[in-house]
Length: 359
Image (cartoon, rainbow, N blue to C red):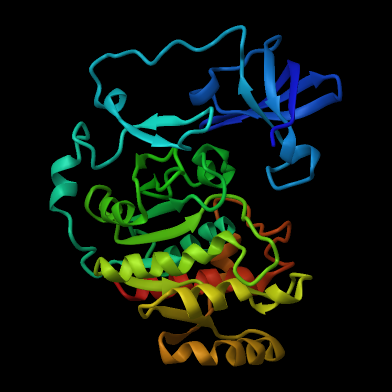
């Protein structure tokens, strides 16, 4: 359950879109904390703050942060009812939690996009790249841009990892490189809000004008090490959604030669389960050429059973290393950079390159 602490803001270390990183003095010492001003107000030095330290104390995946629950002595004012449509939203995200956020859904009656969304029924063949981890996002983007740099790309963020899009410094660094972010399900904080992946994809195409959409969870990943106990299982459901809506699903494979866990080496069991057992409709599964021969053989053997349903596509990797190194944000997955796990990033970039080839 929740482990509470009370403390005082000593310093505001850095800020990015939607988030502020703080030093907070508590009885346990100075803790690194994260505040979302849209939820709790703008923190100031000297403020007393209430913290949730549960995941931090237990060493779980919150990026090493305590999380600010409230600034109790200086509560933010209610949003001004200034007649703007944004304040007329009724879409509740992180529902029935103490910090549930009420947002304007892209297809709500008050939305300026309501008429477009009422008429939207198809993705018109738009390529939809699905990925297990948030860390694949900039690599997929690099693969698309390597061949078609002017492509309009929208990120559709699912709720398997972080719920606030504001947590992601990657998204902050990609502002201007994406046409927008749409947060779906319980996730929130995107440029547009959607209740489901289906409406998120339709909004990407018809509201933001996407030529390619990338679907992945936010930062973080829930996993128990069991065959079905991981949040990335929703990857297969995203493939189904894209195909049902008339899109062209492209499955980015989670491939690694640097992960120390056997279940993630070669092709991760996350990809094999999501694409092999959950995705009921066919997708293109791009396989990067030019990998080390032993790794390539392992990948081919693991993917062979998936060929009965999906299209295994060989993708050349010429120029992708340069494109990845030119990424506007740093590349990192589970603490490993490009040179520590090149196969992972090449596989994601290959999916992006293949999506660009479908345009």
